[in-house]
Amino acid sequence: MITDSLTYLRESDGWIKTVVIGGLLTLLGFLVVPTVLVAGYLVRVLRGTMHGDDTPPQFDDWGDLAGDGVRAFAIGVVYGLIPAVLVAVTAGLAAAAAGPGPRSGLVVGAVGIVGGLLTVVLGLLAAYIVPAAVANYAEQGSIRSGFAVGDLRPVLTSGTYATAWVTGFAIILAAGLVAAVLNVVPLLGTVVGAFVSFYAITAAYYVVGHAWGDCRGLERHDDE
Picture 1 (cartoon, one colour):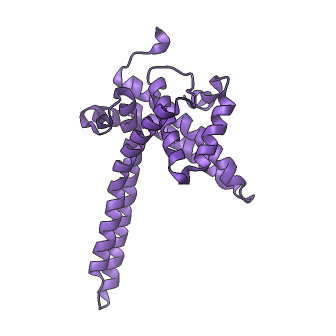
Picture 2 (spheres, rainbow, N blue to C red):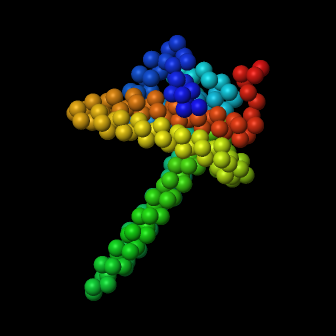
């Protein structure tokens, strides 16, 4: 599956154009709109691969792409708010606990450590849930489906999805390490890293899409 995911984009005759567009959008992700468009592309990746279609989508029909991207982006933001809220609450508790006396520093430190650990755990949990939530949106077409516990629970607790998520995470982590090495040369890591990151996250969502289709027992287009 890893090999298939890494060659997925190259299954299209126009794969270089796709990588160039995706890399440029990733590089400009700080402008938000490009990030939304990449999210829309990943929805298309999920929508195809969950049905066994290994032909990479194109960057076209930009209005539809943006619509999918906005919904996928919103799903990710909602799940990401939980760790963010916890950070704010932890900071508030630490501030409230601060005061005169030698124990105040210990209390603030303890609250900070516990809050930090919980934030990391919840952050990883959100990262685990979001691809499945977006996949459910890609399948059903409703933003509500991104929060449909009844649909998500059996997939999230399956070994198939867990294995796919770990595989995707490893691909993205490897891409991050490559970008870090390239950062030895000024700007090279940033520019080339954006293209590597787009390629890697597409490969990761390829794996997730197949896992989602297997878990949900979806009809395979390649068997028609």
